[in-house]
Image 1 (cartoon, one colour):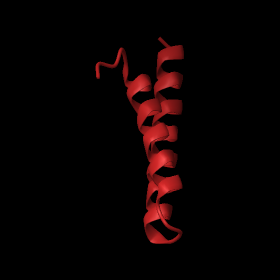
Image 2 (cartoon, rainbow, N blue to C red; image 1 turned 30 degrees about the vertical axis):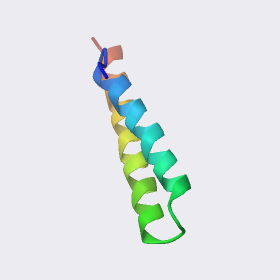
Image 3 (cartoon, rainbow, N blue to C red; image 1 turned 45 degrees about the vertical axis):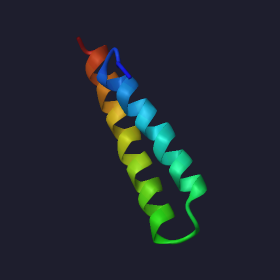
Image 4 (spheres, rainbow, N blue to C red; image 1 turned 90 degrees about the horizontal axis):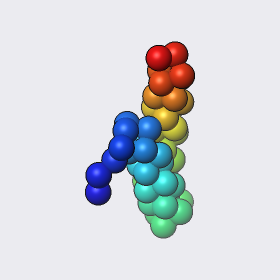
Length: 54
């Protein structure tokens, strides 16, 4: 899939990781996916902040 910018890519990754977390059993794997989703959400915020300062 082609992404128009980094923000789109990171938003897609957030959705994927949240979906993986919902499908994972409770425990370390679920927390790992939630951690990845949180990291991608921070990247989305960084990307939006950078694009607003341009």
